[in-house]
Amino acid sequence: MQVQAAKKDEERRDFILRGSMWKVLISISLPLVLYNGINHLFAFLDTVIASNISSQVVSTVSFVSQIHLMFTAVGSGLSIGGGILIARYFGAGDMVNVKKHISTVLFLALIISGILLLVFIPLAVPFLRLLRIPEELVADGAWYFTIQLSSLVCIFINTIFFSTEKSKGNTKIILYLNIMVLSIKLLLTLFFVYVLKTGMLMLAVASLIAHTSVTIIAVIRLTRKSNPFSFSVKAVDLSPKVIKPILFLSLPVFTEKFAFSFGKVIVNSMSAAYGSIAVGALGVSNKISALSTSPPDGVQEAETSIISQNLGNNNVPRAIAFFKKTLTFNLIFGIALFILMTVFKDAVIGLFARGDPVFAAEIEKIYRYERYAAVFLAVNTSVMGFLYGFGLTQVAMVINIARLFLFRIPPLWIIQRYTALDSSGVGLAMFISNALTGITAITVCFFVIRKMKKQQAASAEFVMGQV
Image (cartoon, rainbow, N blue to C red; front, side, top):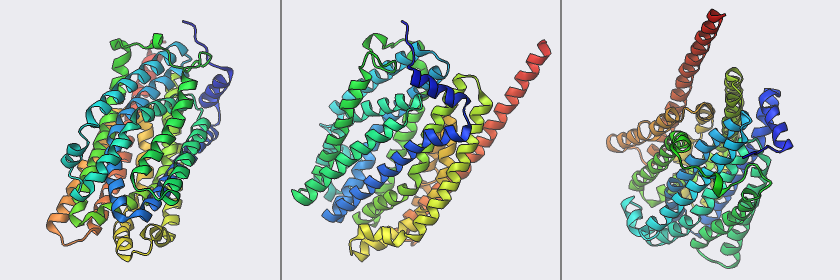
């Protein structure tokens, strides 16, 4: 089967492999940075709108959203693991394997998302109770969860589609389509809440409609025969030779993201000890914090693809150099955003409190600590992009699981059991977790790079000895 990349894709590949590193990093990252920033800004506005309904709605949405992220972690794992391989094959110019892996990953995503829907929609109420959602949130939460889960197939397709575009460095289309989906979601949410005066469930309906609109475009592009990055049933390969590398890279990412989201559900459950308003305050604090931590996530996504392509081209030193530039960029960006959010902290919190001094105080108690994540997670995010790009997804998994289950949940348990702190203890646990994660990540990365350089030096000496 002869498959050739389009001229524009080849030019982009050559730019990533040989162009100025700062130009490559900024041009590939910028659309993703803008997308992540806009995405969290819209999520921020979504929470503001939800707070206009009631603080209980904010608590329900915050709790269920973390559970929903546990399920989307499957799609994220497949997209990252598959995307790493697709980018490597594209970097090596092997378009046959590019098409084969796109088709196989998408096929797996469709099967898995279908199974999740069939199993968990009928079990919505007992599943939420199992995860210890406050009883007063169960009834509305179950319906909200069901509608959210219904969008899973669309989200999986969209995630895989975006991964294929990222793997070839075409990040602009990701920005454009996500602006479209976010705009549709926001406009529908405003219409449902302020014009039709509907409740919380229509927030989930707005999300479902918005994700479906992107899925339609994704399916059209992924099934276009002229597209070398398209899906083909004939190209699906479920042999161990293809499946094993996909699962080897994807399962640690899935486990990490699922465990991380599950850990946040546990933190929400523990926060409920301070009352359901504390759960809502934690959700709001997370949303505010994401305004400063999400832009570096866009740089990380670009970093992973760039490193993978350069490894496919057997250029390890250039791949490592990209990590160092990413770390520098993210640190500068993170510090700037930390300062900005500190200056406007009270004004931003006021948007959610809507004149409720009790809710505002709860948010401030947590966010005063969580805002430091802008700096610590800028380091962690850069390291994650490096580890993903080099295929060290197991190492990334260990660090991110430790972030919740070693660095956050045990400190929160100790704070609740042995101190008299109120809900500010949740914020303190967040600070401890984010700080230790950043320190651990950069330490691990230092030793990984040192080991790589030693291996390269030994390999060079061996080659010289053969001459």
